[in-house]
Length: 370
Image (tube, rainbow, N blue to C red; front, side):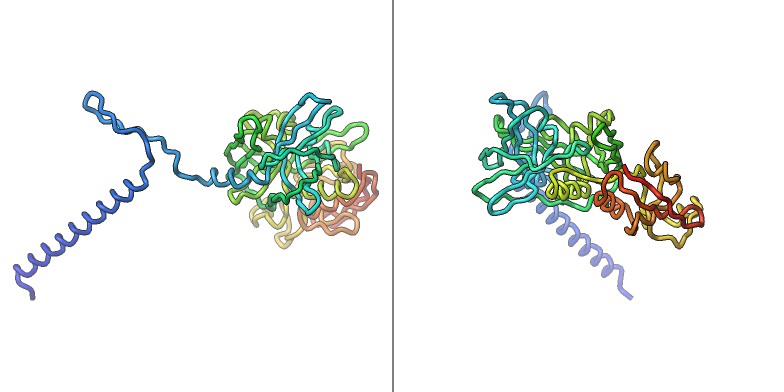
């Protein structure tokens, strides 16, 4: 058993070691802060109180890196009516090859009988031709012929975008100020927007992302980026105005854009069949959701229908809210991606059969698309 003196001596030794360690840690912390302290004005003493004024702008943020990383993939698209400039918006480098560069932007740039130029981030401005456009989605595809290879931007799988996910809206660098626009927000909801038809074009339910990242007259046509710098949607002032939702911006999802561009490459415009339903993937539903909706717990594929548009082919065929769509014609529908691809592969006025799980029964309903 240790004596009282031995115990007391050990306590003193431990306290001394702790004091040295704390002092060393404090000194290291001070030096670290001193080395990384941003430059600013000298301390100022007023009435005995010292104020330290610093402009904290030397620390790069995630948003800063995303915005700067996006610039080489963005262009300014300007329309001219004869020699007078009409408007300038943002474009996205979609594809770049040895002899051409294709630009994704808003179809609104093509309003009126205009000519279009594209200004790259390196300052080179070139005339552009129109490969095609789609008024329902406000998407246009342009082509230029630069003597350099531009870097296309990358797209994400927009079906995996979640509510509350951070997003960055970036516009191209303006020729007059050499500055671009950047705004930051979160996904309010990945959703859909009813786009009305007209005498020549049937209506369409467009896949969109709604966020509170600000949109303006110059960053429209630009990307809504996730924190990996990948395009989740292409912003549209036209869609945002149509939605009339204060403080929110809208963009066409990356996945639907790929389908639109595929059609434009093939025919110069987007062709698709209008069915008139909105649904969610059964595979994403929890067991308690299936139970509450009286669905089979063993059902793991298909699209659960939670909206049927009035006066739509789906309504005319007898599709109801609560049904599960599992097939269109010979196409198996396992999820919303299958549904979207199938509709883009079809044409208005196509006759087909919808395979539906209604209650506990599987039925086939004849339908005529629009």
